[in-house]
Image 1 (tube, rainbow, N blue to C red):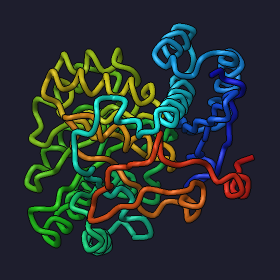
Image 2: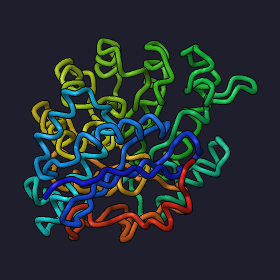
Image 3: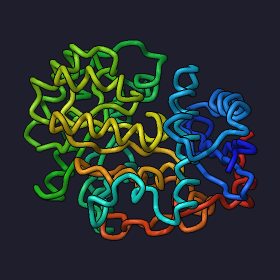
Length: 376
């Protein structure tokens, strides 16, 4: 079997153009087509990288996954592009073997995969009452774990949170009013839901070290499942300080790739939970290696999953075969056409995904829908 073509399909995601879905197909001379997805905030750069490395892959054996990954990695291929291609190669391998990918990686460690609801708050104003009501709705649908974003709470006058978190306002300080607003909403949710529902807070790298510590300490009474990315991920000493001084577990890793970038984080005790993303951290096997490295420090893994359904399928395959799985991210309130894009989308049942049984990823692109929602 040989690779004959590598194709990319950019599709509109939520908050377009911020979150495109970049699907990848690897075609072979035996008619087997593997599907992958790359995490990208701007589709064009990833697509160019996929197209360039795709030309190099033509004529090569798609089942030599480790070899091809290492050769691409040493050539400096963009990690999101390499991740999407690697997922597609594993999809081919599973189809050829006639079994799900996790069976090729040691078999299932779990009977089902627990998920948490991210985005449960979409459509609500950032008030304690509306957020608590949205949280209650998610729990009524079977979720036992929820994650909310800091962004909506970071108001200063009429300045919106997205300015603070995404680049125009360069300050990283949190005000007294902002701390009170965040605490009020977390407190309202905790009171409404009781002690048994897990709550996590994603800070999207918004703060400096003093502000991250301050907010983290203020939230200690509410028993967070984790406190995510309060500061950017590049300063290991700052992260180690946060991890050692806060009661809530520090969770990070969606912006990191490969076991090499996670190594110092783990060695320095700079995280209590890690969240690599298979669509950008290196693909399924590389993320399994990251999980294995984390397990040597008894650190659990909660994979990040924020884009399309192929990435979710790949994440599910990974989750099945890592023993130190904590929980998988699930997007609520995503684009209405998400499940149109593929055949056989995984379905959340009682706050869990069932273990997949179909060969490979267990799904393929619906090209009519992909073309309908194509991102130009």
